[in-house]
Image (cartoon, rainbow, N blue to C red; front, side):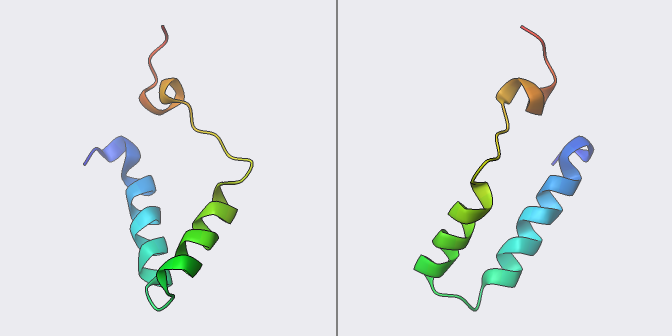
Length: 50
């Protein structure tokens, strides 16, 4: 785990924890809805310019 991305790790695990009472299909639908319109490029993630 890197300190640089610690907030992202925490947010992911908090989201998983909050969705645990839901069935699998509902969890997948919620995740897909949350991803719409968002983009994280690898270059932005690692901060390297090619």
